[in-house]
Length: 486
Image (cartoon, rainbow, N blue to C red; front, side):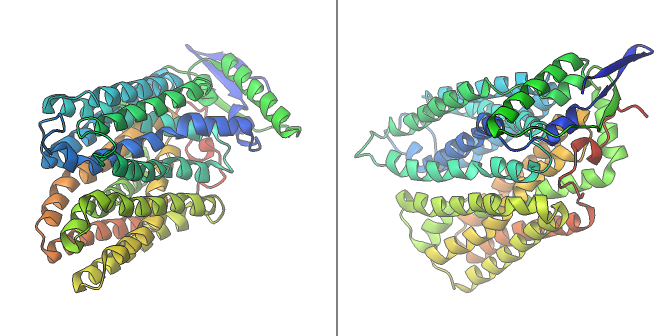
């Protein structure tokens, strides 16, 4: 299993079985540690984002301790958060490919925690805006660093379901955030100027716990051997194999598959761009379609959901958290229950199916809403069913772009498609949907639903033609590394 090394010009050519050794591992406690260390940060993101949306009305009230309007929280602050996520994804995605997964997933979590803590100390609107932007930078960087690390550490047979559940765990945090906001908005429990600050503090405490677990997650052995640290990669995989074998009580099967590469340093940005768009144009079109489709669908439903409930169904603003907790739970159940099928039935039918079905269901919901056939409860039930499928599809977008491009481009590819999709749906989306849902006109809200449904359905049709059969395949088989020896 040792790595062989020979010199070719100025670079070393190495033959290694590291990818095959990682992919043939059975599931073990070590993999659970990776999931807990890397994946649980999405729970914090869901908690924090949902709380901010739910406490917007309270922040705008006299006595909140922050001179800010509800529109500024849900409009400008939300757009700055998304803009920060786009910037963070691109900057930290590039650094992740250059300096390694581990360094960056520690840095991005530290930035996220620090900015979240300082948001809770806001006494001026500009301070709140600045640290919402920086919080977004941290979470954008997390998407690039975490997804690339997870896919390179998890065995091929489990990669799809694990990636989906990790990305879908955002909605567990959203459930907690929805219920937590109910308590924090109760001035009988906390003063108006204190409760919202404590929600940010709680997020920091939970994040520190994640940081303690994350310290034990190693660098990606795939990244190590690609960057001239072959001996370290071999030693790391050997220690992982020893731990897995001990915890499962099963001997590991021998591996005879090897890959030969020319070890190299960081790949230039132009090389990455040329690879993604010139060498893999169909895959690039797929990634853009998936990210833009899911971003607009989610904005169509979740942006202004509280305003829809209060305006059209007279739901008290302090009770909207209960409704959002229901749809958030439906969001998590989708990846949890459907994730296994992405590894068994296959990527193409599941990606296309979840996108198209969620789009068609949202069209149906829009029609029922336009007819006046829904109540607050039945609308929430419809949203829950739509998002059960949409969440699995949206999570598969991150899985897709993290596995269909060469390893040297992986983190930046995730960052790029996340940034473009998020900018399209997460910046223009709120500006568009806030105007449509705040008019109080039923037809405008129906139009908002229709736009999200149409783009989601179109993305599913694209996936039906372009999605890759990546299930149970090694990452190196799906996309040959740029460094691979011919």
